[in-house]
Image (cartoon, rainbow, N blue to C red; front, side):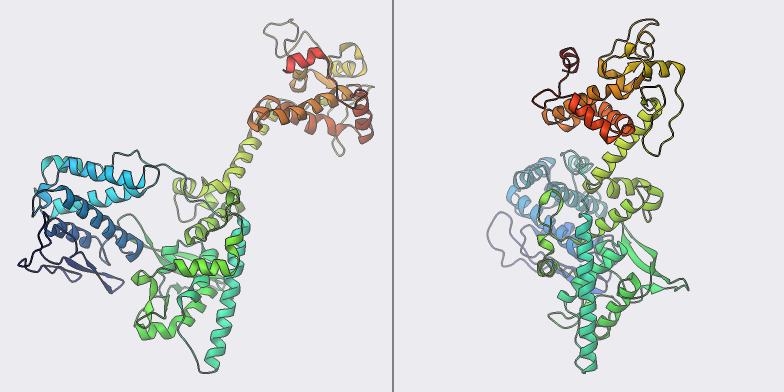
Length: 557
């Protein structure tokens, strides 16, 4: 049976069937083309060819150059693996010797999912991937032969798995020092490869590029462009065009979507080997002999076991070479987030490049979301672990700005009632009430002097005495802080630091963060080092321990 140019099925006779409940009656083979290269999937070892054959036809119909599954590895090989697992499971459960699609039941699909959960658990994505492939192939088989599946099975195809949707955080970026180390190592190797190739050509001993040599070139290109690994691997030799006098060229690449491939371009710098266009031109020059010998237009062409080949067009993996390269440069000895050793992943290099851009733009999505919608950029590239500290700081800064807008800056003054500010600041003049509070100790309330104890912004009714504890003065616009209050303030600051050791960070911040910030950023800078030294001396007892009145301690604890 043949489907167009790209698919071939061979079904042999069944005279020599082996005994068993699900005999194999002959080979099921199909061939698809990836970037013009034929790839054959042989499923002849599977039992139940009447079940396997329509599912294989469904997989063939969506694979290769004319289908959405155009990447040989991992997409295609992964789906073949999923098909194999389901066929073997179904063969063990179905009692009919020559069972086909019509013999499937919802219970069998549920049992298959349960078996996957038993093998892989529920925390990863393996179960979802297996079930998504099987359900998709069954839907396509039903479309090709309407009615071949029973009505209950067709109803079961409305969802892939009973597990809740996974909403884990996206792949994290590397710490920036790791990205910089990867880029330095990649470009250093690129220069060395160029120099050796030039020396070899001068001596008449040119050779094809090897997969091991391709690793730093590919890693360096992703560092410079931020291209997805599959996009970088799929570049063609003529991907650069439209040079401009300003030193930029257009880079054309193909991006895989859910059910299609789209052609995209980006403007990149041209110049030496440390620019995207310069590195691509080097790769094109190094791979030109192998490209001519292989008759390919791929950028990444070099030595293969059977002669020159376009590595990534035929699913070649660089996993072993990537790890060997990382080890040679000591990259696997660097610290990842959490102190774990770095494990090199091209996807994380790309994510790190996007993270670097995010940090450079200060999280401004309009600048960062190039090539993506704002929603995708925020969900997949901004909301990653590497940016947690930045986001936490942004929230803290925003809350502080809101607090500063709601609370006026603390009022500091001299004992004579003159306004006092930090060096370089020009404090506003004091009101008459503030001048009186600063000059007289008659209105002192331990941490400050109060302009009007019976006009508190915290009181429920007018004329009521201030209801807050003494340390509420730090957030009160009625408070005036003079030098005579420094010993009490210093003792209170020491108490806050002691509490920092007793409480966890969020609890301490919630309870004392505002008071501590008002002290350290708004009050203490207005007084001289000599004044602080004297205050600390006056605020401690004979043993050098800061002392606070028992009444104040009761309100604090």
